[in-house]
Image (cartoon, rainbow, N blue to C red; front, side, top):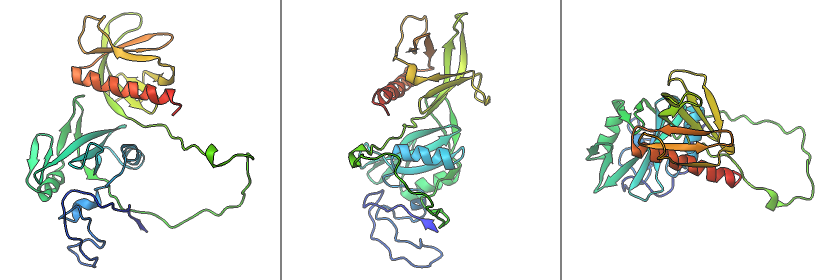
Length: 273
């Protein structure tokens, strides 16, 4: 069974909807009002949230999987979400005067934009990570029509109402990249590979290592801030009860990105999320 997300009336380019039909050159479902080309609608996920995109790509995608979705920045902005090993990076695609701007390229039509992706482009971010966009993640995925039978059904707690049902899930908020870290005892600086996922910040000897040197539990972190006490630029620190960790990024933009997402993580933790 193919499961399709419902397509809201928003999108990339206006178009008169087509009738469904078993044609080898057309989609077998009604094309979105957004697209003049049926093919990209297969990996255009409409109003899929950033959180849901990360959950999809991390749980069921692979390195280089990507999808296109609407951005919350406005109707002219779209987000390209790309899995890069154990994190998901998000890039803006901007529509301006019916042209599509991505990275350093401008595409005169949606067809040219999609053709560019067929050639598996290489994308680099501020962190220096290079990602090959290998395969689009489809909006419609084959799923079995199998359901479990309920054999036990009883209440564990009584006296509760619908007001006690509080939806809760930790934000994924992934990020990864190289940072220079100061040692704890010998105050030298070494390059380490950092990954951020949920409430854990891990650092590794290098990118290809599977086991981290250490995992920092952000629920114990009290502050993240720029640091000017070190004889280095682009530094920031994470304050823990037993130690303050000093880290340096390659650029000021990259340091600012790390600080913003780490502070956001702390704000979510304090809200109990």
